[in-house]
Every structure is written in structure tokens, then in C-alpha cells.
Amino acid sequence: MNIYIDFDDCLCETARAFSDLAREMFGIDVPYEKMRYFNLQKTFGLTEEQFDQLMIKGHEPEALLAYDETPGASEVVNEWIRRGCSVSIITGRPYGTFEASRRWLDEHGFQRAEMYCLNKYGRENFLKNSGFSLEPEDYYRMKFDYAVEDSTEAFRFFSHLPDLRVMVFDRPWNRNCPLPGDRYRRCTDWESIRKAVSLD
Ligand SMILES: [Mg+2]
Image (cartoon, rainbow, N blue to C red; front, side, top):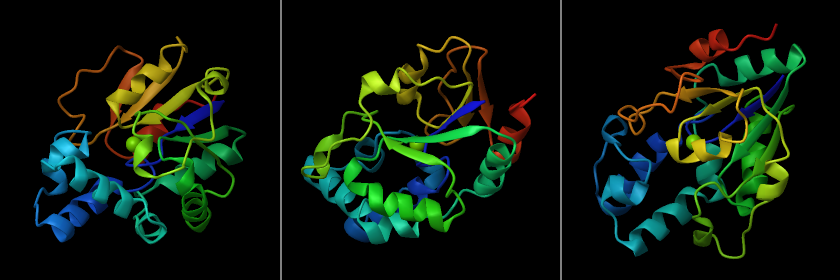
């Protein structure tokens, strides 16, 4: 089995950290449960400049290394790897964050999972001179049986895989979005993701 896993808000609690950051930096108080848009600029009502500042701050190594693991993530991922699955973490973070992101993964028990930076959201500009490590044509050659993703904007990266099963990590910003089909299943935590994946 080949499994795709998104990084932010699947393996770690990125949105909660950004909620704290927006409060600290701009005095804007939007608690996690009220984060109704995947777009953080819209969620917090930020100017372009504030949004850039927030993204830069939230992608500094100290910030990335401090993100909390989503409960149960490493346990389930390691169980899959032990049982012979290949796990690829496909993140929309720019490559400039690779070192800190890789370190976070290693420190949280994900040493055996590969990580790739793919430009999923077209917002590469906030880190200067930082590209992505995985070109779309290489990504589209990869085959996956299951995917774990929280962003409906990333679903377009699944359309070339008609048999893929997608576990949509339930988050406030995707809660009211209809899922594209019956291969998509909403999962509230890693225990339900574990149950949704059949390795046999
Ligand atoms: Mg995500």
C-alpha cells in the first residue's frame, strides 16, 4: 500500500498555532473552532502585508518545531510502515522549511516516512528564493491507495487516481464542504483513520 499524508493539520496542529500567532501579532482573536476558511488571510481578515508577516513568522524554524503532534498520528503511521506500507508526506510547505520540517518529523517518530514539498496552493512567494522539491510531473507519476488530507483545495491532486480512498481530516474549515464522492470519508481523528484503512 502507498499512502499519501498531508503534513499541516493532519500530522500536527498548525491552525491552532496560527490562531495563537494572529492574536499575538495583530490582536486578532479567532479561536481554532471558528477558523471557517482554509485561507488564513480570509480567516483572520488580514491585509496582504499582515498575511505575509504571519506566514513568514509561522514558517520560521522555531515556530515549525513547536507545533503539537495531532494525537495518535505517529502511532498509526508507524503501524502502517511496520505492516509494509510506503508512507509519503506530501506537504504544501515550501522547500525552505524542509530542514525544520524534517527535524520535526524525526523528533515526533516519523523517521521512516519520506517527505516531499509540492506546490499545492500556489502561495510560494512568502519565503524568498524557496521553491518546492517535488515537481508536479513527478508527483503525478506517484501512485497512492489512500490519502489523508484536510484541505479541499488539495483534492485536485487526487483526480488522476480513480481508486484512491481519501480520508478527510475533519477540521472547522472543511466541515461545511461537501465531499466529492463516496471515495472520500470524513475522519475526526487518527483512530478513525486507522479503522478506515484496510491493509489486507
Ligand atoms: Mg493540511
